[in-house]
Length: 129
Image 1 (tube, rainbow, N blue to C red):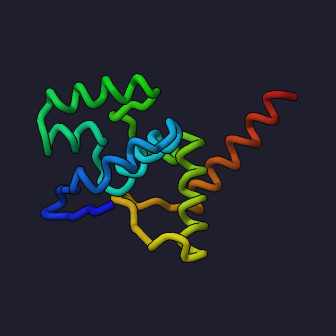
Image 2 (cartoon, helix red, strand yellow; image 1 turned 135 degrees about the horizontal axis):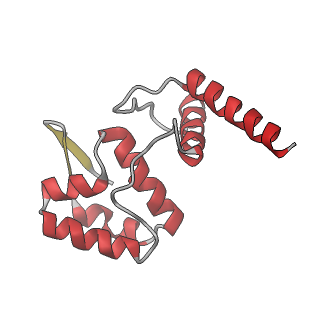
């Protein structure tokens, strides 16, 4: 996939990614939308709206919804357990050099997140008893 960054805008060559995007599973598409938000600080919907038009963004989102993907989804590891787990997977992949290190748009304190999620787990277990 070819991605070029100019003045904080992401421009990609559609012909380079079209076939790869078609082969993504639903879950892959959902994670891609979250990762785009992690890296840019902007939802995929807003990126499409800025780069194309609001009309195209609307129809892209409607099409994505057919596959249970919402282009307005944001990446929130502090409040969404799945996002926290994605962050842990990314950190492990960076540490093992399986992925090139990429800083998120918004600073993420993994130690603080781990404390928050551990306290939620403990509170949930206490509630069950």
